[in-house]
Image 1 (tube, one colour):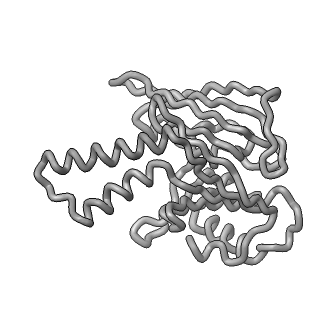
Image 2: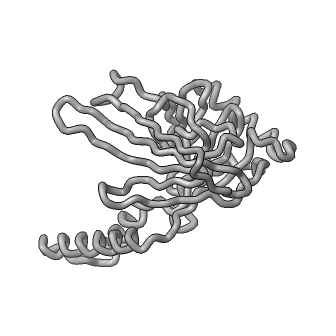
Length: 235
């Protein structure tokens, strides 16, 4: 497994910018789109957390304030940058211009590679029922008549309804709305972070459920069919 990880590093660091406009490799970032309903939800969450601390007679000092701000901001994952190659996908989640989470996906190996306490961890990306406490079911609703041009690429609407079934509780349902393109040969599962082992288009716009009432929207920008030099120094 670590050998596959090492090969992926070599591919990215030695073949960084010589591909021209090859759509099988490049980068883009999915950036949070400001939405009043989401901002209002975050404000109410911050207020709720402060009230809970006060009820417990815990002083809301600067450390606690930082915690509240950090927790409520992390919910929206302000930006997710994707670096892709036929054999590897590197994803950086960024909040306030700071990478908060970075992981490498090796699709052909069904592996995700990440750091935990400075140690490299390698795990399966798609999980079977035996590896979880329940099972995932997915329903796809594709509408190719509903289209957008995002970063110069044609995209069409795809709804993904995810149901997580557990033996001891009601099913948990999430509904994603995405505008995906077939021009970039990435399985959109990896960008969305879902456990559906079926190929879907690469999402350049995502409406992701925050809760039953609110969805967070992200849209791609900065699409470039070249890989930056030394991108793996950040991993």
